[in-house]
Image (cartoon, rainbow, N blue to C red; front, side, top):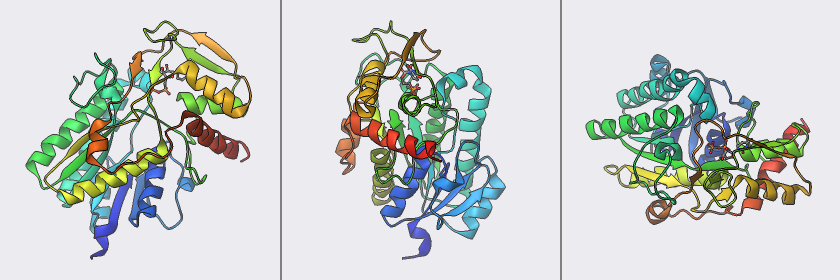
Length: 332
Ligand code: UDP
């Protein structure tokens, strides 16, 4: 087998989900290179043997050099901006980072003849789904620029796969949380906004408490309901999706990545209290712009398509791993 047949270029590999994908790829015997502009990522999140390119995925010339120097069997594309409220206040920044730069990356992959592409998409493409759990064929109606920016990239991939010898997997993540169970990586984002991370920061004293954004949603306890998925299970799904793309090069896959059950903000905070043995201060605040009431995955497609066996579905386990990482960060 030629060397490039086991080589993957991971964009955003120094970031939260990307760094876990790097670990999962390595654990599965893949060689990995990373391109990351370190806008939010951290070089230290990567094992030393990973080839690291400090640069931007919008730079097609750089990508051409990278692919020429070391052909890749696949691209796994994580680089992008991920904060829903920020996308509402800076839509053009999001379309630039997530859509325009993805176009450059896809173009470079096509030009270099990379046959497989795994894309980090999002449940935000569904907007406020009419039916929860939401299946892949539900209406795509994003209610914020973040979701729209990712949906546009899905469309580019679908059209590109129809025109060029490339197949792709678009994995629509629900709410990713937790950290590597072995403590090798976790979420280090300095200005975190995601609920479980924020709750863990409150536990270690990095913030006073946690705001509950909206308690008047049409949900059982009035707070937002989400399908929290452990980052290590999600990373595993990427490796399996890549193997499925290789096995059937004419088939592309668009799949939800979630567990198919939802927890409210209050239930998540209860879990954090339980795991930490404390009572996190809670403050009720108005709804945040762009937040849908409930997002839960119908995951029957991924379960039928990939031999994916999640290992960390338990909410307390997800919170415990996130907290272990937060404590590690706090200890420096
Ligand atoms: N949320 C909250 N307080 C926070 C952060 C989030 O109440 O400090 C709520 C948010 O309104 C949503 C859920 O927690 O209902 C998950 O939000 P998060 O930002 O983690 O992910 P999103 O679903 O926006 O991608």
